[in-house]
Image (tube, rainbow, N blue to C red; front, side):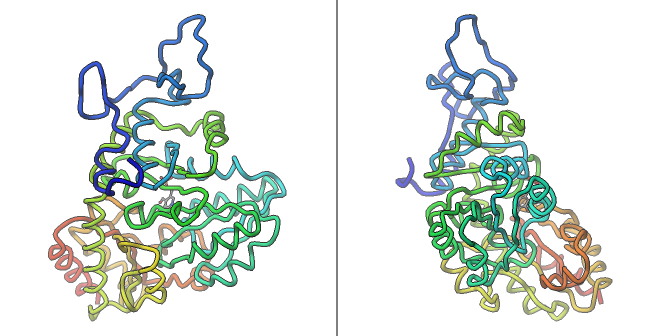
Length: 393
Ligand code: PLP
């Protein structure tokens, strides 16, 4: 199906497991930790074996495999591996390819969990971790010195929606013999597909847009040219495999991925424009706005700008807290990418661990709120944001 069908068709149909016994049109939930394995069976312990049979769910499971096939096609890849969480996917991939003495180059602005893993855990294993400026491509490329093994990127970033010129960085990294891994969680394969631009591996937190309903945890890594077998073996050993029930929910949720993303893109743009003109807002960060400093790069890299944005409430921390607490339809909660709109304050959530001077250096000011714009009627969202902002003064 790869290359010949549109993303909506892929979202609905790719990976489907056709149950020969019943003819069920949906992928069954194979809620079994183990599979019949008679004496004398010559199958190897490699997970999914050539005849499509399975041994033990930590190695592979038919419901999980169906979701993996769908994600691989959505990202224009050849193979996907699913994990229990996004962090299990990230840590297993990085621990597969990095050894003591290897150099990893990443960005100053990445998801806090990935930063924590790299800054404190990978360095403790003797891996040389460097963080380069996100939006300064020249300075970033300078950090990719000979001997760099992996470059880890995230675009757009959390919470300021900065972009990375990843096609340029991929070119430079490959010249130095380094691999490029990209966290595509904010954009999703509907809005950008880094494997098509030469990335070696894509990571997705399936907890967010792929699942889309804030009811599961999942992580995925996807490759086109790069051999994923070493990651599959590491997944078996580290044990971050996915359970069949959330895999079913994920595969079912992804059937509406393209449809949902169209609405997230529309609502995200409409809310960004609305907030930009609001008298109680000081600035909006959204790659679809012409005022975004990397808007032209965004139009080159993305086919839609998504549902994530952040904005500063006029005043300070107190006013922003008041606005957030006054929202009724939009719920105060961390996470993102679900059908419902959520608001959070980076100062006391995703970036609470950073010292104030470090937050200031990254441009994360106290009154900044992050909004995950859902698929509700946009006029209802505007009304809720307006009453909340007015009561923040
Ligand atoms: N990457 C990004 C951009 C995220 O926002 C998150 C979670 O918030 C993760 C990775 C980690 O995903 P998970 O919570 O599924 O482990």
